[in-house]
Amino acid sequence: MKVYVIGNLKGGVGKTTTTVNLAYTYAEMGGRTLVIDLDPQCNCTRFFAKVNEYNKTIKDVLEAPEHINSAIYRTKYEDIDIIKGSVKTLEQKSPWSLKEALGYIKKEYDVCLIDTRPVFDVLTKNALYAADVLLTPVKFDNFCRDNLTMVEDAYHELKEKNPELKWKVFANMVANVKAQKVSSADLLGKHDYPFMQSCISRTAIVDNALSLYKPVAKHRGGSNVAQDFVDLVDELLED
Figure 1 (cartoon, helix red, strand yellow):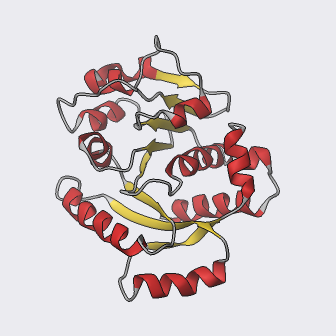
Figure 2 (tube, one colour):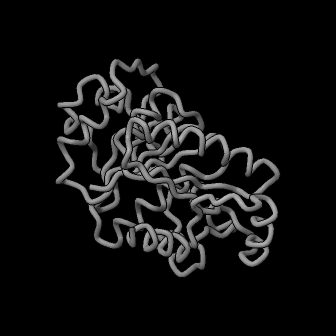
């Protein structure tokens, strides 16, 4: 099982949108997929399942890693399961709890996607200590370089605890791919951030699909942006 943490220190870059659409795309390709909602806003949970106060959540997993199976729920999509998020305060006893928990189910899934909030706190670090890849979506704006510098600093710190952790960055909400390449060169200068070739187009289709709680490929299967997510998954699978 390969574990991806979708993380950034900036909000509004499409972390949850990325998580749900990658999950659906992986599943459509035949991959057994587990989604973990580590964001207290629980948007990923609402996308895939009902929020029920009586259900077990990520809070229960972190408190008792050996009982992770009891907190895994089926979604309406075949081959996608979810560990629901928790709006309750999560008190971390060990930064390795999630890694321990995932060890019990690593043979049951091909991929695990973890949605996080825009801060590398103890909860996000818990996910990153268990991760193979930190996947960072970015929007190209005037704050992009400063944001990536902060993520890079955090990444190098995290590698001291998880030496195998890789970092990948991709451009999200791109209006014009050719123009984006020029603007990104201007914004980032000569800094060698680990950008992927794939990028996700900016289009109302994504927002409309999200408002309907549908993956892009389910909402508009033949669209260019649906293919963007396929291309992104293909590139991730090459590694």
